Length: 503
Image (cartoon, rainbow, N blue to C red; front, side):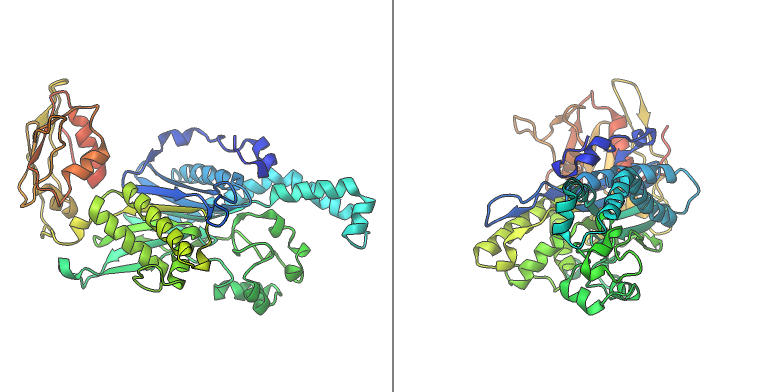
């Protein structure tokens, strides 16, 4: 059940949670993390509405897909769109559809299914408008049809919700991105010119289109519908909408004639046709990608306008990428990086308000999702040339509880060789051969060779403590009851050891 008092009809439909069997196969992507912040008015010291964003980051078989949704006029449409997108993509990845077609069709299907859900309301709305069409104005209509006018207002409230969506998919080492609205996907890669720790340069590319009145292509589309481009550009709105494309918003999509500024249009000005990128081959120099709602980059823009944030460039994408880079260098953990970056933006934003920046009087809902392709250590400062070679690992270990022996036979991926060439595993001990060894996880008594069992182990702890290049501690000792399969499973997922054979 969706909990949002502004969308009672959608609550009654109970469409969130009506997900089918394919979702049981989904797992959370371990290469990603996300964080969120609710809207807040600094002047009123309260949130102006419920949290309306949502996101997902999941894997299914060999495919991974991610999404950020930024809702408005309630959270019901956002939650429906999130769940239905996951369901639609999960179903279609099992077919022979191309990834671009999957993303395109999934977004359109969500909008269509939402329309089918509220079709009774849309039809009732149309019937009421026909009934009151003979009246001259709103006052006369209310005097003649008070119940109908009251009901019409209720319907308008229940069908006006909508959401943006940015969705990405990774399949067969290719990245695909699609969006409607102004939520963004941004890719950060290492420039080929970067060759040393002191001179690391990154290329930052926005992969999506902002479907707003600031987009010339969208203005041209609206002009072809018979609208005044300058007027639209001046108001920065399409009826009651800030975006020109969205999921939902049927009060504007089907009721655009009710808005004076849109009444001359020969077709719906607000549509759900998504932008879909061509396949982007994932290269060894890919660093990370981040998806975000507009509340994130608008907050950075507002601070840049007030000159209260140390800018890395005029584009907020650059600043956000820089903040994420600094966090990933420190933590190498996407979840922690996303959380810390949003906390930093919020802290600096409220500081700007307190220093007199009028643009920063409130913040919108914020959602930030990060997907890591390569860790910072791999990208700079710790490079080895394994191109065209096969790295053979001889590590093996036996579980005392099951007698199971696990031996990766051959590792051919250069990025895997980069990392595992620095680690020797013998018996139950991980020993490093790098100048800066891996750390220990300390026990309560502070010894340097603590035991780790199945209860104290976690992939996040292992990632942060075993593969931290800044550590000076020597090694990790595993307890006898530690399940070797758990360690291997995580290594396989973290470094994508698709060609490892276990025996």
